[in-house]
Image (cartoon, rainbow, N blue to C red; front, side, top):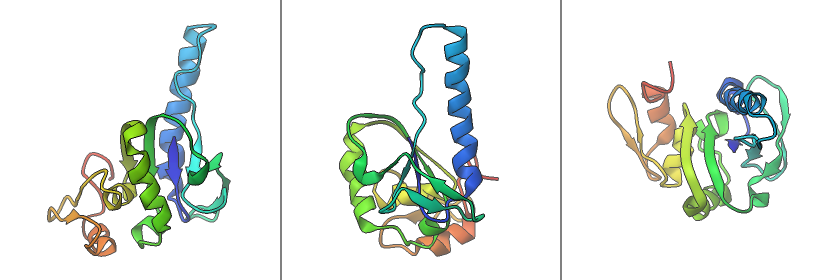
Length: 154
């Protein structure tokens, strides 16, 4: 499951999504009759399924966060403008906290880690000055100072 918000960085979303989709496709091709190993879907943290990426591309998500039910194998949060500018619906943050026991693996791409930090599912450290972001810190300033963990972003 890929989580995206308004102003999502398109490469943060579609790059990893393509990797999972391709891996599932390859597995199915090599193991005829077996189920796909990943069900790739996009979930928006907005109130509607439609969102606009930071490049202007309109994306229609499979579901909104309010429609997610059941267990989640892998949840990846894509970075983007709304997350960096702390313009995320507080209900979406509470949702992430509430569903965390149902998630097997959690990850993020670039500033998507800031949403995980706000939800207390991860801590954010900038590569330059080791700032730890938690909900009461100025997360936008820290993102601009260090951007991302060294093994996730350029």
